[in-house]
Image (tube, rainbow, N blue to C red; front, side):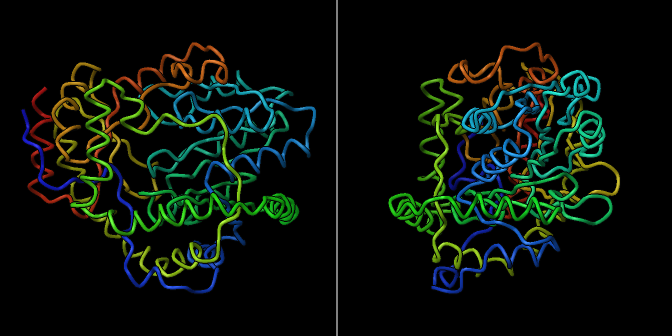
Length: 401
């Protein structure tokens, strides 16, 4: 059995905050990131899921006869919760075999005149196939919302930011997702008229001092503890408690409440994010260079499939997403790596229909490829704190199948 690492490695690489980031400043976070990414103006929200919820509510007003939202059957449970909270119906689409994209045939079968929106997902920082979703959406008169929650800074083959090919797109600023204000989101739209509608929807979100004070305290904790020594307390200890009681959903944080809070982001947290923005390009470049250096070693391991971007696209690398040959080998690797502090984890525990607590939210569906993806996938953190020796230890475990 692998000995536990002294200091905890995170399962996903977030930009560490500095003491100077915590000083007051101008609340220009959305504008700063829009300038960095080269996008039209972005709308700041209290979470990526809140951005999705506001988008769905706005599109529902534009097309009140359409009620269905098509999402990948393997994605974050918060997506399903947002669809229900918006008063809409979830329609699942199976994945391509052994891939994170929606299966083209399944997508066409899932969409019709009742479809309001299709939500392709840039999973794990990888760049998704949005073009196919656009073709299908135009055929049935639906919208496309890009879920780029895990892909802030990723670019399509034409060099443009993800989140802009569809009608709307959203990013997450949650803990560990590149730039973070602990919880936050950004909402993008190409069309000025839709962008104005989304801005009005965001302006209608109430001030909630209780939530904002909570997020301030959590952000201070993140700034202090998002370090290998602090992560052992903040992340590793709760993880191992969940694993000891056999609660894998809690171990990855998939146990979400049934309602998404909506509140405005305060000036101080915006300033913290703005202070960190100038360091983000170099940080993403560092992660990419580290990933490119280590990808060949991972691909040398028999039976391992490392998920990558389509030709010409440039995703971000907060972690590696791997598919192992079968559940047995995946579980054997995780049994050693998961509790040992090496940043190995699972992205989502189940395909959406298989979460017990979502039984009244997600319809039953035959989605074999999504279930296979959940059964064989494993994530490896790509933090700068992951040394070459740590990485070789991980590869040794993965190769002992």
